[in-house]
Image 1: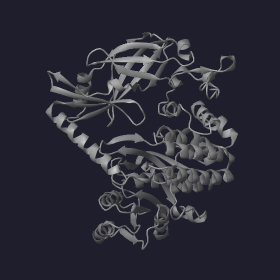
Image 2: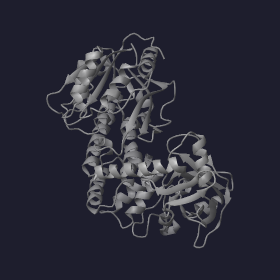
Image 3: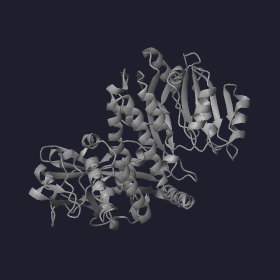
Length: 539
């Protein structure tokens, strides 16, 4: 798209020890066209060749200005503040050195801001997993395309978008309200910056365009701050950032302050809980830190949170230390949530978490069947291409709804059209719940991947639809039993050989790697070597 806007934007790119990637980020900013008057790259005293890369680019691109910090700040806030101070354009955009701006992002945001007189404009962002190139939308459904928010307090759910990089800011608005990032070694500085922006009550214009691509490199030798969760200090930093943001928002608007606490319960708490791990020391520290923070929460926020988050909070408050069934709690915090048996009842037959922790699961009766945290397990069925599916009841709620069939859905993890299998009838299982045997159509899935252009190794997520008597469908992801997680080689008239590796994702769901033919097998081996190297580097 050719730009029709005059130079209006300063893009601030921050970099630290990122010589291999910063050039792509800067190039994506320069490629926005004439609407970008300048790109200000702030090198936070890198120890690698980042400074040389930036100076080399500046020598051939007059719009690129490089700021060299003499000392490393320890965080992202100070270099962004340096960039704001150096900016001369009416608007500012932020870009991290390992991400990119898609074509047309700056122009779309400027056009919306000026058309609606909005000091803030926001667009769509995706988290792109590399090297798979799997895109996940950031806060999908939060924004209404083309809307203009006159007061953030009218849309308190906007506190869920804590990113600073998918938005354009009028520089005079930032100056008027003294809005800056926390300086120094402050992790999750964007939480506080975003809270300060919302507290200043700007008009916000929304565009439907994709304006930011957030690269996620889990196998990198040096992972990003948001992925570096090897010790409890990351969680402590997130809590402190959230505490600060919640205070800023509550002082400006009770509605925004309450929404910020609810967001923590429904998003941050569940995300870290499902990644709790098995280290006893980490678990104990995390548990104590979390309970201490939750003790100060407004009870109205707990009541306003969804049932799943509410139950987690009450279990945490009821147990001084991680309970014996803490792994059950981590599965319940997964996405989608799963509450595996046993199912205990308290006085009057009311559902409770467990006999040891009789925390009432209030609101379970009101949840629609499609929102129940049902556990579905997938085990090895008869033959190499079959699955045994087990659907657990949940305090009798599924029996009330009358489950009839299940259907597998294979979703390409790199994006693309899912493949639906045929529905299969359920039958009562010994010991309760329901079961059935379903085909595991590995050859058909591989063929679908080939038709979608995947010539090498394919990665698929496996989801399941449980259909009830009234036509309601519950969509969830089955949890694979250990016996299913074995590699298999299938003879195929189409490919000669088809290698298949079912595996368990980080969230505990069933997924599948397929390698059809010789090319697929080669990419399968390369992928295993890449993951092995990444694991050694992370260790």
